Image 1: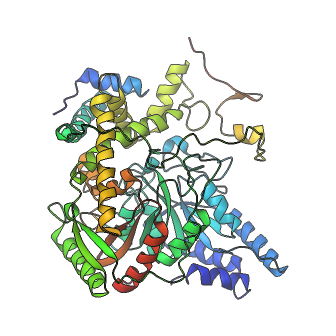
Image 2 (image 1 turned 90 degrees about the vertical axis):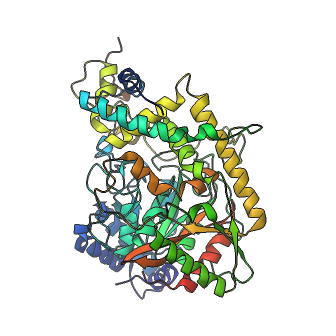
Length: 477
Length: 96
C-alpha cells in the first residue's frame, strides 16, 4: 500500500484525521514484513514511538507541529541520528552512539517528521550495489537476485517497498541517482552545498551531497525545501532559493530546451535501456520540449577524474578512524602505532582499504601533480564544458545508468567493473550541479531511470520541470 | 599502465596505517594497478591555461562571529564513544 503525498499526509496528521503514532506503527509494521529484503539495518522504534506520542499530544493541544507533521522517514545509516547506532554499514562503527544528529535530520524533525529506521548502504558509501556493506546486501525488490544499486541501496529499496513516504540518501558520484534508477523511484541530488553535511559521515568532501528519495518529485522537493539552506555548522553550505523548493505548479515544458548528452547515449549504454530513454525523450518532445543534441567532450574522462579525486578525499576523511576517540579499537595493541594499524585493519572492509590506498598513492609526493592536480584541472575543463552547454540549453538529459540492475555477485570480482556503473552519474557530482532521476520505463521488468540536470542553484527549476516530466512519463512505481 | 610493485603496496599500506596479509598484498597489487592504469587516460588531456578546481561551491573565507555557542552537549556525552578514558581525558597507549 502506498503512502499519500507527503503534504496531504502531514495535513491529515495536523487535522487529527490520522495520528503520528498510527503512521509510525504502519511504517514499523511494513519494515518488519519486508525484513527479507534487508533494506534496513536497525529501527529507531522506541524513540520514534516516543516522538509520535509527543507530536500527537501537541496537536491535541492545538499546536501546529510543522509541515511534515508525523511523517515517518528512513535515513541512510551514514546520517548521525538518535535512537539506534550510526554505523555507515561498517564494522569500524558498529555500536557507535551518535552524540548529536545531522542537521538534515534536525531540520526534518523540527517540522514534525519522525525517523523510524536506518537504511543499509555500501560501507562508508563506497560502492554502487550495497554489496560492500559489512553487514548484508540489500535485495532489489523488483528481482531479489539483483542489487538495488548503491550506495543508497537500502533507502531506494525502502521506497519501492513502501516502508516510509521518503528516505534520505547521500550522493557523491551517483549514490542516490543510480539506486533510484535501479529501483524505479525518484532520487534527487541537489546543487553541492545546498544541504548541510554536518553530521553526515564524510566520504569525498568536494562532491558529497545529501538528498531525498521518494515516489514523486513533488514529495522530494518538499523534503529538500525543509532541509536546504546555510548551516553555521557546515561552511560549504549556500543559501536557499528565496522562492523555496516546494512545487505548487509544475513547469510548463513547452519551449524548454533540453540537451541530450551525446556521450551518454553511445557505446557502453545497454541498447534496451537506450530505447527506453529515447521513448522518454519522444514523450517530452510531444509535450512541447525542444530536444537538442549536446556534446560534452570531456565526459569520457569524468570517471578517471572521479577515481583519482574521490579516493584522495576518502583517504583524508577516513584517517579519523584511528581507534582512539570512537569506533572499533583493538584491545591487544601494545603501542599507539599498533593500535592505529590493528583497529583500522580489523575495522575497515576491503573497498575502504582499496580506496584509502588509491588515495594515498595519488596524493603521495612525486605523484601528486601527475594524478591529483591533473585530475582537478581536467575537472575545470569539464565544468567549463557544462557551463557552456547551459548557455545553449535549460536542462541536460541522459540515462542514469548504463544498464538495469545487475545480479548480486556479478561485479564483485572486479572493482573497476563495479566503478563503471557510475559512468553517467559522476559528471554532475564533479561539477556540483543538481541532478534528478525519475522512472522512465522498464526492460524485462527492471526499472530504467531518466536523469535530468540543471545549472548550479537551479534546483527549483529542475524540480519543477521534473514534476511535469514525471506526469508526462506516467511511470507506475 | 601503472604497475605497482610489492614494495609500493607495502608503502601505501604503511601510509594508510593498514596491515595486509600476503594474499591481500597480491590482490591489492593487481587491483590498484588496474585502477591506476585506467585513470591514466587523463594523460592525453590538454589542460594548458587551466587551473585546478578544489571546490565547486564558489565560496571564500566563510567566517562566523567569535562567540561561544552552546549546543547543549555535555563533555560526558561527547566522550561516550571513547574506547578508553581517564576522567575527561582520552587515554592512549604509549607512543614510544
